[in-house]
Image (tube, rainbow, N blue to C red):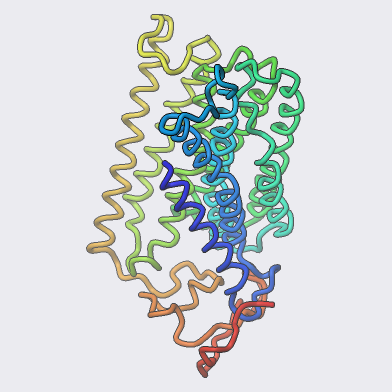
Length: 391
């Protein structure tokens, strides 16, 4: 985990530097694809918060090996310090996973709706709000620990507030869908799935953010269901949509439509069965992290178990679709979706360094319905020493 946090920090520096200094000419900040904005937001959070876990492990190592007392109460240390450092990573980590998946779906849904992204600036504000508020919500994991009870209500407010930028993103998704010409391919189906999961996860998250409600729900299966709807619902199905969308560009083959859709729908409905029943079990009082539980929870646990196996079946079908399509699928054209962003304006398979000549961005990446292209390709290679990053 320490090496994972360390590598995340290095990757964050790489991503941030690339986006800030190496954008194509003409790609001003209001022309940057929303997926890139989401990746930038995730990289910032990873760079800031993942080192907190490294600090906690370094302090623990020092206590064990060198006899320091960071976490030893008898010698002036505090176990609360460890828990705070852990959750300073543990909660922003959720957003590091959810934000790129959400950004990918915002990126692809405009292609399958054939209309511009509804309020690009609101989407950017949503990502910025998540980055800002991610730093002031970690204590909601510690309501029941007894640490600083007076801090519970301020952090309850901050946790409720973070539903607002997520609401911005849901609003952008719904606004983009309004009167769009839906192309019912697999990537678009995952948008509906993630939107549903985010709404359920977001509503239940508002309940759990309240100190009085959390006193009953804390440590129950209700919490497990909530964070799986947010983390797995957005992360897993968002990843499936992104794979289906960019699969032709990555492999030069089209993903098998019927197999991909079958795997997705099996996994999606099984997901509702698995974690929907956990909401019921949690409301009935079933605790998490226990091996043996009361017989009153048998039915909900059997339902969850069956659903979990069905999720596995759906994912195996999807994996089979990936393997067979990669090995013997239909050859993909350079731009099978008719998308406007830069990656779809180059050849498939992608040549060395992406473009034979440097592209120049000239318009909106989501300008569907207007004849202007997103970028033009120069006929002469620019000198290698010329700076091509946007100013």
